[in-house]
Length: 204
Ligand code: GRF
Image (cartoon, rainbow, N blue to C red; front, side, top):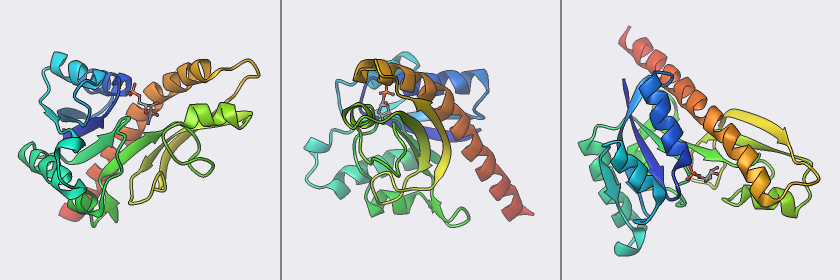
């Protein structure tokens, strides 16, 4: 079982789907820690209801980004986390945290994230609003590895879908999130498989 940490800042609908997929066995892993930088976020309640340890680390309480990430690394270490999943976590990770999670065999950090567009076209958190504001006729949901840039990591899975003429940000987001909830657990399992085969290659 791969030990996962989910980082979230918002309502936590992706967290809920990841927890369900772990329980159903479609992800061969278990969420051993939830990290949240927004004390009032819905994700905190979802984690607590599921009995999962939560680290609430409000970045405004720390003197620097590295001090904030040091507290997070301490918890990752304590819970022996292997893979970090950013599910609506509204902070960029610094080289310090990415370095802690760097896996030389995979040649990248063991951190993945979900993005509500095609990151080649738009980087940032407001992907659904961007697609409406710029008149896109199609958009995408993307799961990718995380590097030091904003949404610049290697793509793991991506699903495109149409933007309808009558769409508002809300209707587009509702359809996009339904895709997120399907795609993210699949992408996590894909990475878990890849990590597993790397580990057995290294052992043989
Ligand atoms: C998702 O739309 C995701 O694409 C974006 O943040 C949102 C998180 O939603 N990065 P939730 O908190 O999982 O409901």
